[in-house]
Figure 1 (cartoon, rainbow, N blue to C red):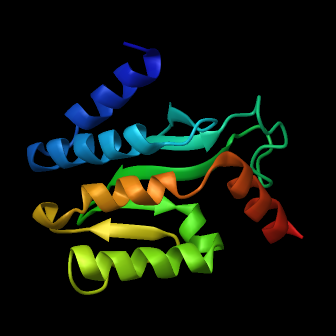
Figure 2: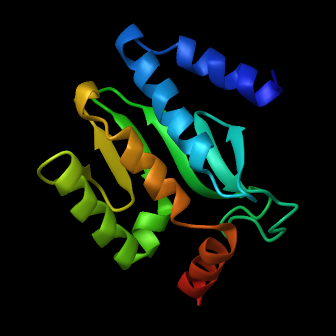
Figure 3: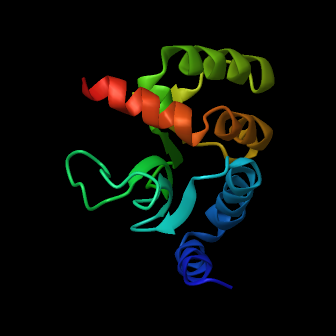
Length: 149
């Protein structure tokens, strides 16, 4: 087990019991579908980043920080998947909301770049995996750099 795996296991164990299995399943959906080049890290919660070795410029506000694509957080009322690709890519957002409506029904509970899951039994693990697979590192870096222009 890596240091990151240990830290994430500790994070998950600290969650309310009813959140632990859903967070594990979301993490598995992410890890099973994460394109090559992204890396799983543990900060305050599990995150998936473009490592500094691949993109030395890092996040523009704090260049010593790897550029994040996603993070997974258990909050007071939901499990939240922050996905910055949804924020920067209108076509991806449209695809996700259409697929969510088909697979789950209704509209997802979303902010600009986050999806909140309040009902654990309605988490679309397969759809999360499909979402993760939609953006490779090159596409993400291209979108990110265009957004900064």
